[in-house]
Image 1: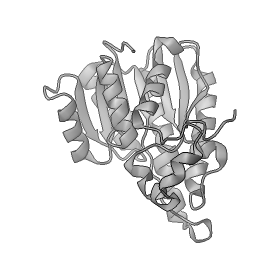
Image 2: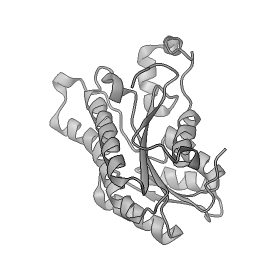
Image 3: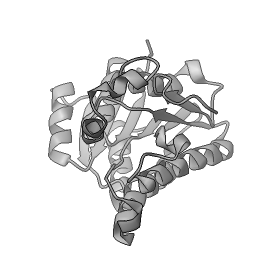
Image 4: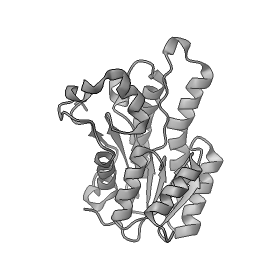
Length: 247
């Protein structure tokens, strides 16, 4: 569907359910990949599975909330492939923390992993991105609805991602396009516990009558990086089966 031949993607959160689907989508479209994730061993194994020769895919361990780690990932991208065309920030955590018992440390941990990480990645990648490059930040349906109970920290970070995306889109145009994707309930390990709490019938409350699949999100991300979206910046694509309909 897309042609990313000769282009290079830096992907954070690459070993998650959505991250893996994004990696597969871009590899099939011809891109070379730098896969970065906190789970260094799992990400390295995933990279080998995608590209046994190691010619187009490489991996690095990454704490996305640590600026030094992000700098090393960007450097690897440039040293290994000589360019950086696409940045996709998919690193995030989703933990249960009731507001009235939420600690400062829990709040700060989510802010670091979900919001600081996006700033660090964008700030360090952008100086190396040429005209025609693109950034896609992964937000969430929670950014628009306020999030579910026990996830005030998560919803706040994802709303921050949206505001940050819109602002830097204005600043970086026309050289670099910056957009966001807000997934709804996607069938990944990250939301498995939440789905258990809401029961097997939750999918019937979604107009499309199914959970989203990681590839649904990956294809939206690929579209936003492609030439088909060359006049799109500062916007958000909702991938939620109609579970949220709004601006």
